[in-house]
Length: 204
Image (cartoon, rainbow, N blue to C red; front, top):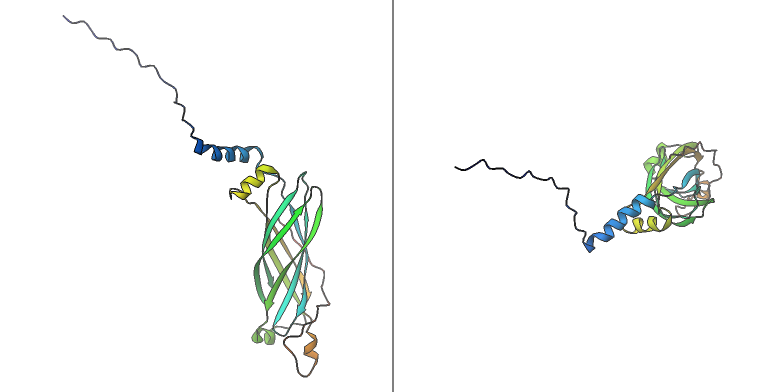
């Protein structure tokens, strides 16, 4: 006669460690870098003005003034600006501009970025170019987080932060000097004289 059989209880086992391969080490290092120090101070950007600097019979060139500050304790390298300038009645300019500048800790710098909008004949006939016009600016500046970790994350494309900015105001598009002559020349241009005080709005 065979007696009852007893089975040994199963002893629960914990999770088995996952082997780490050498190929995983760079990725793990980057993850640690991001968690420990990938984030740094962001630049503060303010659009202090925009104005036409020259005008021909068929185009207007603008200059946009920006003020950037660094409240942190380390340098903030800037890479490039991406922005849109809209002038009521004329059109919109979308562009990129290499920053190639660094904001020292606790410092404020001023930079200028360009824009240009063409004036087709049909727009010139429809819009009063001698009256004040409204402009609006929206954009952002891509920058590198401070420190070694910030540079590593930026170089490998993991973290490339962008700080946004915006502004608005009015200015007057003065006629080029050629308009006063009997035979206007499309290649002549004169700097704008009037620039009315802008009402600025900055975004975080």
